[in-house]
Structure formats: structure tokens, C-alpha cells
Length: 98
Image (cartoon, rainbow, N blue to C red; front, side, top):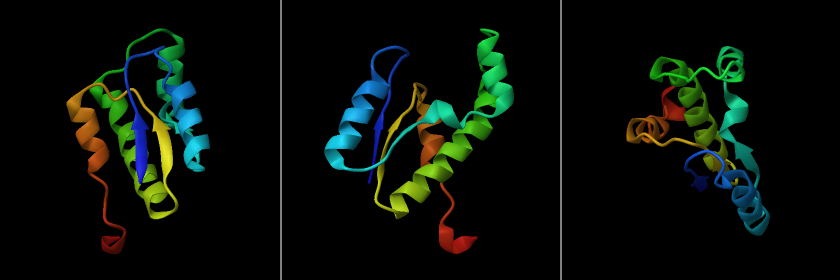
């Protein structure tokens, strides 16, 4: 099972997620750590990411969610505020169809 802590910036997603992971004795991950370099550079320049920027990131996070779910689970902090982003995280290829 994957527990996702999501919300706007600076509300304590990471702090709460880490505490939850400790309580559940499962790994904690921050989705921001999976952004491609180009996104990180753009964010450092204080430029907002658009949907096209986020697409590869969301696909990677979705794949990671599948991997973690197949193992022992995880807690993920992620600012997926748009419903369309949350839906993308549910579109994970079935490992049997690869």
C-alpha cells in the first residue's frame, strides 16, 4: 500500500510523511526528488512548471508507486494538486504486460 501525503507547498508534507513512514516501518520518498534535471533547473530559476514539464515526472513517479506497492509499500510526499495529475499516477503499466 502506498500512502500519499499531498497538498500545497510548505504545509509539512515531508515532515508528516517521514513520521508516518517511521510509524508504519516503510520507506519515505519525496516526489520532488524524481524531477528531471531540466525541471529542477527551471524551478531554481523560479519559473513555473507547466503540464508538459510535469508529464515525464508524473510517469516516473507512477512507475515508482507501482514498484513500491509491489514491495512493502511506501509513504510519498507529493504536491499533485490537479486532479489530472493524480489520475496520471493511477495509470501504471501492469508488470505482466511488459
